[in-house]
Amino acid sequence: MSGVIVTDPPRAVAEDVDALAGYGVATVHEALARTGLLGPALRPIQQDVRVAGTAVTALCWPGDNLMIHAAVEQCAEGDILVVTTTSPCTDGLFGELFATALQRRGVRGLVINTGVRDTAELRAMGFPVWSAAVSAQGTVKATGGSVNIPIIVGGQQIRPGDVIIADDDGVMVVPRQRSAEAVKASEARTAKEEASRLAFRDGQLGLDRYGLRETLVRLGVRYQSYAEYAEYAEYARGAGGANSDTGAGVDPGAGPGTRS
Image (cartoon, rainbow, N blue to C red; front, side, top):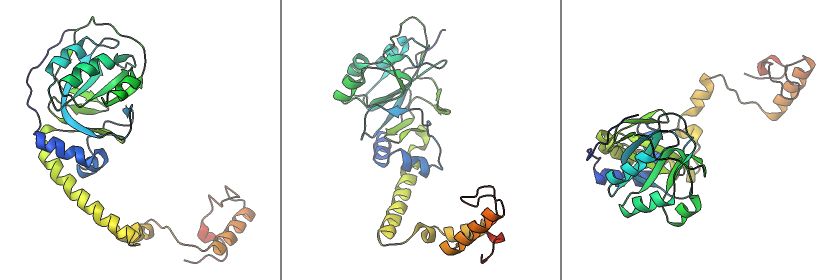
């Protein structure tokens, strides 16, 4: 496997990156029409950490971390290193020594679609990591790969310089060309959520605030008193319903005493 190391790719505007870190994954993901999420497989090895940075990408061979060494040289302050392999791998490609080198360069964290080790040391040194596995399995340094090329992680394309946001909820990518748009959309969503939060604190229900009562009517969902439902359930048992305990499988409107 041959490859290429791309130097000095364009990066998202630093002010946008820092702003997006404040909003977090769930808010930005929703604000951008639920796009960019790298899926549930990437989990943090720490808790209560939220970061955002510009992506430096590395494509490695399974069980081989040579290209992570090459990627470290391309990392700068404010970056997040994103690593994947050419086929599935859970080996521990990354550990404390890599983190020491990256931390010295001002890198904000690691997202790796394989395994990571030295997790206690990584937490102690405050270097955040999101990985698909934790494994002490060692690796070699023998096969060429690429740095700063587009890669796919969790079904999402990540290009060098894109914004990576990571917290306890997962990891997402924002294309660098959309960073300003993402900030504006996230700001609007945050304001909307704050208005809802205040309304809920004041006693309003989501059913009313979001107009969901009409949705229930449209879907045919009805309200029924306990006495009415108990009478219907007794009828369902007598009628040989699919589930005699709950009456499931029998139309609640079919029994005696039900009201439209």
